[in-house]
Image (tube, rainbow, N blue to C red):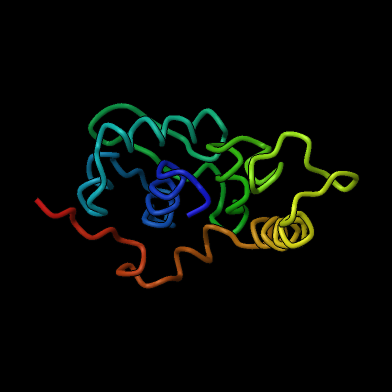
Length: 143
């Protein structure tokens, strides 16, 4: 996976949020998706700060999407958690890699970056919500 575990958890949780605007507790999302509750709550708070989620405290509170799922791109979620330069730079980690000083993978990685960037700006949470839940859920870790 090219993104962090936090981004993967966020995408799973966002896809599991109801589309009717009702709130869902982080605890319930974590249980449903078999994710660590405190870690998921921290991730969801980051998404609130990024303006992608709204949160309300209390027994009828929780988290909900700040906008319709079709208007939130996967790229916005990735940027909120990974930063704006998540896919920038050399795939091999060379500091001075670029068009004028390419590493052996630079031409291929540049093309892949452009394709990934385009896909991230086109795919939305609504697309994720259409996926079968079993493809989003994590399997329990072996004890």
